[in-house]
Length: 132
Image (cartoon, rainbow, N blue to C red; front, side, top):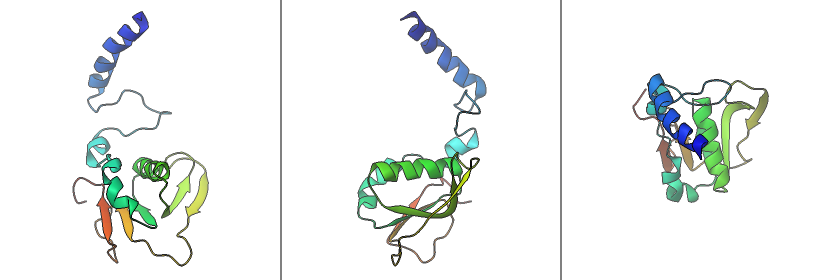
């Protein structure tokens, strides 16, 4: 109980000391500084719209947000693919190749941070808070 109390006192001080909402760096994966506020991280709020999609294209230019997006889709049991090379550690690990588009299928939904999507699918989930 004393340890929990000590941690409860320590954490707010440690987080505020960095000014960006984080206090552990590498090897712990995380978003730091402006990246924490530059993207919309609440992908779960799009659950209803994404549930109708088959398949979903993930086109996210930040490796950490891309992995978070993929994990949300996997947890929801939704099929997805990504044209960007995948790796084992948030953009810094061993390359594992692509998650290919299902043969003969075209995405009807895309989750993106890109400024334009061509051709425009029926559902576009924009994760960047402002246009780049």
